[in-house]
Image (cartoon, rainbow, N blue to C red):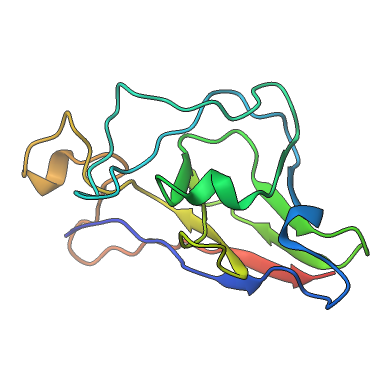
Length: 158
């Protein structure tokens, strides 16, 4: 059975009334190693040949609503980091650990939405260089009969 799995945990941002969205960062446990992919807003298809700047070599991204205006998701594919923390100036936030997942999406809705989603995924949505053959999609796991697969992630409130 072919499958990919992922989560869609989203968190208020800001958490405190005396903070703004822009007071938050997503901090990774290892530096960002490559620019991000983004789905086309109208089709949802990820152009695998087009990457967007994501402060390579840094350990964090500053939250800004304009990051999500044209393409609402940043896809960190084959991410080296396995822990990300959404944290505000008051030191409160969310830590997510995703040892079993190859990708992390950082997502917020267009239009100054008061939340951020940190989404660990084993695969990626439809990509521009793929066919409709599901078994050959990026990150696809093929589960053999009478077998099992375990994927998990952990969320800690800080």
